[in-house]
Every structure is written in C-alpha cells, then in structure tokens.
Image 1: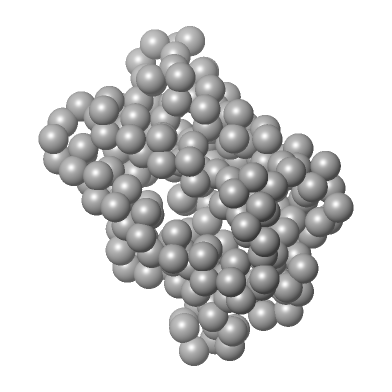
Image 2: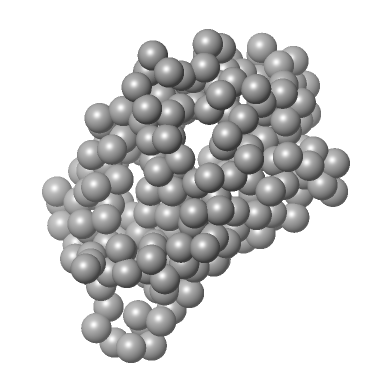
Length: 221
C-alpha cells in the first residue's frame, strides 16, 4: 500500500463523510437549492488564489522538469475551465460583484485558506502535495458517484461541476498526484508525521466545508 492510500485509510471517517455528504447527494441528484449552491460557490471561489499559489509552489519545488510541466499544465487548465464555470454560475445565480471579490468568509473557509497558505509558506514539496492531493482526490471520489453522464442532473450549474471533477483528464491527474505523493514519501519520522498531519487537516476541513455549505448563515459569519 502506498503512502497516499495509507493516509486515506487512516482518515477514512472524515474522508467518507465528505464524499457521501448530504450536500454532495443533493448536488448529484440535482435537488441542491440555488441558495445553497450560491453560498458554496461564493466561499469555494475564495480558495482560487491560495490554490493557484500552491500549484505555483509545486512547479517551483518539484524535483524534475516532467513534474513541473504537469503542474504547469494543470495550472493553465484551472485558470480557464474552472474559472469560467464560476463566472457563468455567478451570472446565472445573480451573485453581486462584492460577493465574488471579497465576501465575508465562513470559519471553514478561513481555516482551509489558512491551511493552504501556511503549507505554501513551508515550501515543503510533500506537504504541498498533501493538500493538493486531498483537494483533488476527494473531489474526484465524490464526483465518481455520479456515474455515467446520462445520469447527471439536467442543469449545467450542477452537471458542469461534476464534469470538471469526473473526466479522463481529471482522473489521470489525480492518479499522477497519488503516484507523485508516494514517490516523495518522507523517510524521516518527524517529516512523515508532519505530512500526515497536513493530510489529515485537509480532509477534516473538506468535511467541515461541506457541512458549512448547507448552513448559509454560518458561511457568512
């Protein structure tokens, strides 16, 4: 068993709770209300800056050119496809410009943003990978629950978010991230524990973020 699978299994309670969260259930069956989707997307969009910086740090700290090029390609895709989805949904859901640019952040959002930025500051390639891996792998797992596109919800505001995390390119990226994470598994015990703690905190915060997404009032505190 690789390091990635080992940690996923170790923190399976939070991981499975996030993947099978009621928020995800409602997104997948198309019953998620516009209010809940709006609140979720407004908060989620605030991660884009820190997430982009994490990808940039991965480019800088990766051990080889092939790895750097993978991150660079993903960075370009993230800046185009995913940003387009957010802007289209914001327009459809009548999200004011102030809520797009600088909304009040909920506790879960602030905590996750802090984790991303504190991990970025370490410049530790394994820790950066840990946060990226959780964010991408866990989303790939819940999106895989949607099955074939014929079963996806009818509205693009739901279906497109699934498609962005359930397609051959995305799945290949997640597989590559797992392999890369396994390849740089720390030998030093203290460093290994630090990476594991980063992984665990990212999983915990993913679950907390979905919890907050169903309580819009909490998401604006």
